[in-house]
Length: 109
Image (cartoon, rainbow, N blue to C red; front, side):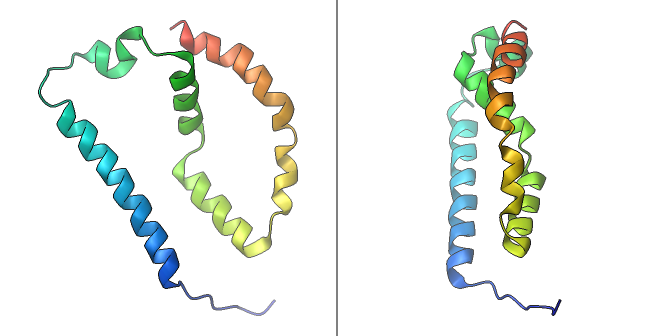
């Protein structure tokens, strides 16, 4: 297989810059907005145990889908194609199971 040289275009740099800027803006907003009041450990780590089911589910999803996986899968798709997507078919069966078993366990903590 011949080695192919791929150049990074200006549009790709622009998308990357916009995403990084948006993440920085969200982080700074919440860091500076919450700075005026003190936060105890229960509120910081457990959300004062008042976290709803949707934010909890999204938090678990974000934890499981790590940045390394996103970068790795993107590079794999770019290089070899989307044949790996067939392994996502079992997710149709796993997502309901996880939402009924795993999320309630974390929700009751």
